[in-house]
Length: 168
Image (cartoon, rainbow, N blue to C red; front, side, top):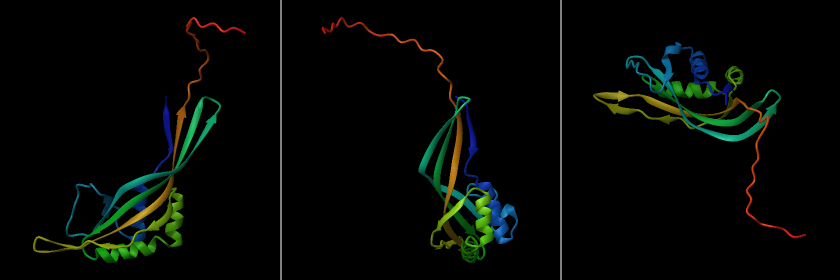
């Protein structure tokens, strides 16, 4: 069975969109498990928390292939670290509702379902305060996979003889 992913969730495009919306360098928006940290510069991280299937569709095509489309909702955590983290998340929250961001999300194959309340997660670290803030984005998207179906041309059918006779 051969499979081919036709459409899936891509967080890279979302990172680029966030950097563009906030007018910052793309390197300041990174994966949550990035090993590159710089405490002197504020930065953001993205982390996929959950992905839930909301519906699915199967289509069969000539040429022995099947296309499975899954409508999904993903919850993506966006975290800001560093100076003005709460302000950055507040600004991002507002910008996500702009027509430009909504258009860019649509181009990425994403739909904005909802944004969680802003969480101020600042804490005392070492001798000072580390500013942190977070929001969760609920995004809808489509995951589409093509699967090859090998046609069964012939099949041998064997029956068992149990010695049962039927009188009619």
